[in-house]
Image 1 (cartoon, rainbow, N blue to C red):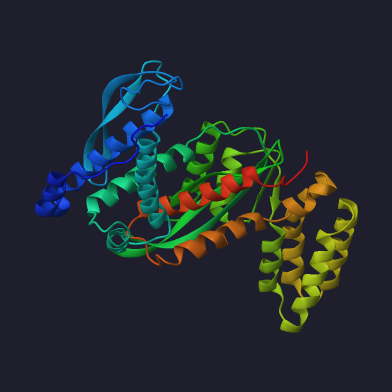
Image 2 (cartoon, rainbow, N blue to C red):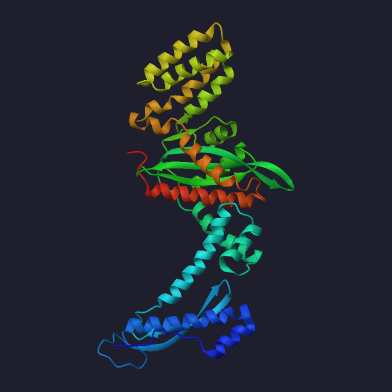
Length: 384
């Protein structure tokens, strides 16, 4: 069996390319892809055009037009058909994948914080063609649609809920402002971590946290047994309002940082920090409370402010003793989100100052979506 699998550009086509230059690229692509798809069909059928052979596996059935949006504009291809409908040309599919790859490249450059001007320059170097700012904006819009769908996806039963915030510099109304990225993550019944959502706002005021937490409930969040966070005033007010009655674990890492403000002598800081760590790592709640009482008595007479702070704040970091000991290391702090915050910072360092809140939300969402997907396919964080 033999069939034609070579394609040679006719002389008159070469002359048209020579005269029209790059303007003739769409037509050239159409001709090349059409020729390649016909070769694909011949291979699929096991026979060339009008060829009679016992190896034939079907019959051609004309062509169907298909218009595809490419970086060269809209091109209408003639897609070869077979009678039993079992064929679709690899040549066209590969071409479409290339177009999608280009769009994803643009999206990834946005994710990396590259400006529109630099995107345009890189694309020109990659493809040998110019790409307009409007094309880049359309690619960003496509990415925004994907990210918005992810941010609004339905939630499930979450046992442990972690809350934290980080700040990025954003240009708002001509001024550079510190904008808060509110982040929620959690551990589901399968023991896997996931980023539940995020919100970008001008601060951590109670109204912003409350609106964000309420949005998690509207998306189906339920079954929360413990909330882990720091003691930010706005966050705590929102937590009481939205999740009243659910136990709260104050981040032990933040507690150890906060206590240093009440240690009057630098030489005493290491001693206080070690005593606090001993309490946090006590074998049970009763022992932890006994050690805390001893620590308070130790400093009561000479360092009253320190003793009062310990008595009022440290018990908020002991809630974990009501939960399985095997979980304590994972739920005693918000270090999981601290590492997430570091990854965001590593990627946003390129940007330095976001041009608007939407661009900040786009980049943060893309990074967090990527992290969450890695978590879902990775190892089990906790066992229930």
